[in-house]
Length: 503
Ligand code: KIV
Ligand code: ZN
Image (cartoon, rainbow, N blue to C red; front, side, top):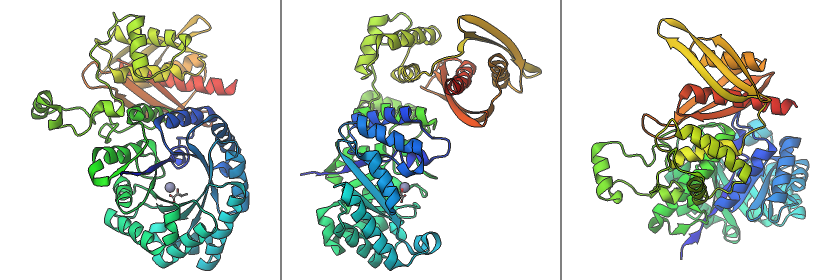
């Protein structure tokens, strides 16, 4: 019988620690809803004592999300644990996750404690959490660099104090797979009380080995992995959920293990996290990158046409990238679009549908065929639109290698067209300057990313920006077959977020 591997998703906690990826409460709930649909076992919803906003977001997730366990992180101090409990107590299933450094480096340099007092602190913290909550996870931070004998003692003490899950983090991404796997196997041998609890691992990706280390741990007896969507997280990130899940599924004969993840929801979740955190997914990213299932060389294409298994080890449909027989074009009516959207699993209200349909026609007029990925991009943007103080109408550019680019931009405010023109260092800069003149506000572009949603010359361009306006950073996203228009829409989206926030 295959062992079940528990998937502990920490996108909303470790993932959200990425600079600039901060999510608001509404966005966190949206991601949590999608994670529940995806079938994760645990959602680590935040670090409630880190800010009042985070506390509120974890409380809201606890009240609204049914199915997965909702976990709140706490340092091994009473106040943190009290706040974590306040945050998760409304959940149908809840967990307090307590952590404390255990390596000598952490004890001496960060905590300034000796091993014995840290061990006592850990056990007391677990006991305190246990007064509130049956399900308590204990993490021995920097476990990989911790003296093995001491690690065994800490783990034993935490289990005896009531921990139901023990987590072994490679906090700094230092492990290599054989070493990490061996550590997990030896822990199981040396600490028999581990048989009565869940043994978890949490790997960071500093050496690009987070997924490999997590898989090595699974082969050696770990039964929970902590991971994030798209591998987002501190520094080089955390182990990527989709890569671990698809490795377990694709090579199930080797791992003899399974997860409860509905893999067909992976692509959608990846897109949502990328869009809301404003972190683009690299094209060659395993499982969810735009090239992950694209075959470009002639020999490969020939093989794929003869039999997909020649060069494909997973089916795109398995992760929710569908290839449809009916092609959507500008002539596809409302019924065809509605049918495709419901096939893709979107639940859309009539008002959202009209907006999507309008945008679909606008894009389809300029692009021969609308692919599934194009549609994903359009739907996601339209469904999460902020109230628009200004709506994009049109733009014209005059640009060339020997002239200063000039852009004329038209936006609509309360039904009235407003047009202005500006020059810039390049056409995109000129358009951004034109937008600023109309909205009467200046922004500093902090980040700009442009990518094609699909392959081909007529690909839909997707622009993501981060703009600093009056000291705060707002993200924006826009799509169009015209990359300058996509950039303009993204820039305007960031300003609309600013206006929505300031009213
Ligand atoms: O990387 C780490 O050690 C952590 C712990 C809080 C589990 O994120
Ligand atoms: Zn971490």
